[in-house]
Length: 115
Length: 116
Image (cartoon, rainbow over all chains, first blue to last red):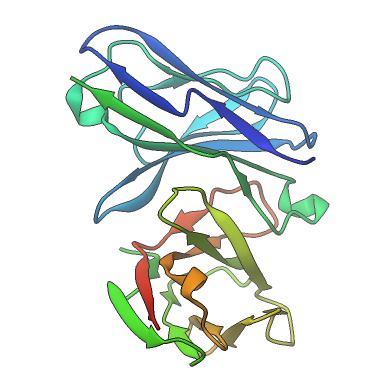
């Protein structure tokens, strides 16, 4: 089954404690991205990756890091989480538009609370 | 400037009626893609429908259709015969230029409530 898998689904952590949210896709997609969703603000892109070892900042990258060492995985790293990073996070992947990518597949979401 | 505008924060519709969710977009690129997603209360993002800027016909997927008016830069989602399970947040999104590897830009969403 084609899917994007995020872990964990729910996480409560304390300010300053490094954490990683994993994302894996099994569709051999080149394009992957991370979004955060906040009430009244919709989804905003944090980082994206066009291929292995190619990453770039989205609209709200401050406080986040990513890596793309292999095609299927695109972890989101919060080196020193703060309460303003409390949010619902989504990972998404798609074929590149040049490959006919007309749909982005989303993971189930990770609800992060930083206290 | 906001690229995707959804002017209806919330809407109500009677079960079995049709409903239109508005979306306008802003781009100067001739090549772009428009998407609609559904987000139920459980939180997942579900792809509904896609329209390419060069597509001649309006996209349709089952009970969903996209009313694409290019000159007006609008891409409204029409849901026919609403069901209680259609109650959710709906997001319009755009990718431009479509020929490149570019991110999806989302609107702020419309919350649809279907009433029995």
